[in-house]
Image (tube, rainbow, N blue to C red; front, top):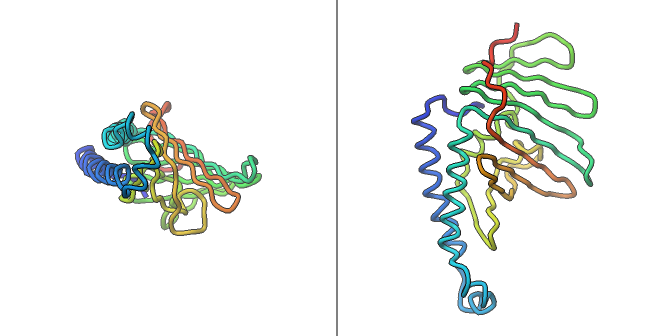
Length: 209
């Protein structure tokens, strides 16, 4: 699964997404009855939740724009701090290459246009029908519509398979650091972490030889 190759289309997605995110976060940040307002006391007196929500939404939108079509990513799944699987890859102009590692086994995946190829270990490349959802985390991120913001924490509902979980959806906390985005989800003793940053290697991704 690859993100839209058209910059215009992707900008529309991110701008539309930011509008939904801002509205959602404002509602969550400002929601609650009198009891909740009284319990938060000094926090509400000193911080404008709606303004903070809009600021975070804008940072999130700007990060997605910066990553658009030229980014690299790492997704890890660990148990008590020990990594059990990892996917490392990059997307250049809508084409993606990645390597998934589970214990000592590796699977390489290349996506060019609408075609996919996979290779296990040092074996031969073979055509594939599609690629694992986790091979392109930004595409899943652009499709997110359920977002909450509470106590300065941005949380999204993200496809579980994209983080290595065997469930349809998980809640992932989002951290935006400049042009980079980090997603962290915890479930049943497992911690999944995806980091997306602007690509350092901008070389063209081509069909495997």
